[in-house]
Length: 211
Image (tube, rainbow, N blue to C red):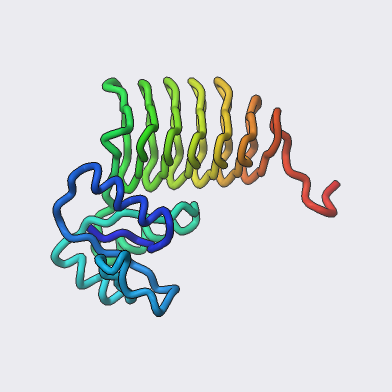
C-alpha cells in the first residue's frame, strides 16, 4: 500500500492498517522534505512521480494520507492518472450501519466514528476520529470532517468542505461546497458556497475590510 503524504495523518493511516492486520508492504510518498527517506526507520518514502508510477505497476492501491481538502483532491486525481487505484480505509473500530451506506473510493473513516443509516460519503473524503453522521445525510467529494465532528440527521455537506474539530451540524442543515466550519462551531442554519462560519451559533467570518 502506498500512502500519499508523510505527516501526522499519514502515520495515523498506518495505525488503521495495523487495526485491520494488513500484511503487505507499506510505502509513503513525500516530495517536500528531501531528507525524509523513511518513516520509523521501517517504511520507505518514495520521492518522485517516476517512483510512484513504477510502484503502481505492481500494486495500484493507494491511500490519501493528508488532511487538507486541496491536497486530498490533488493526490486523488494525480495518482489516478499515474495508474493508481484510490483505496477506501475503514477502521474496524468504526461503527458503520447496515442499511443504505455508500462510501466511495479514496475515503478514510477513522476509529470511533459512527455512521447510522442511509448515508452517502463522496470520493476522497476523510471522516476523522470519533465523528458521528446521522440518518439521511450526504457528504460531498473530498470533504474533511476533523475529529469529533457531529453531523445530525438530514444534513447535506457539499464538495470540498472542511469541518473543524468538534463542530456540530444541527438537523436539516445544508453546507455549500468549498465552505469551512470553524472548530467548535454550532451550525444551525444553511451555509452558502465558499463561506467560512465560526462561533456558537455560527456566523460568517468577516474579513478585515469587509465590514
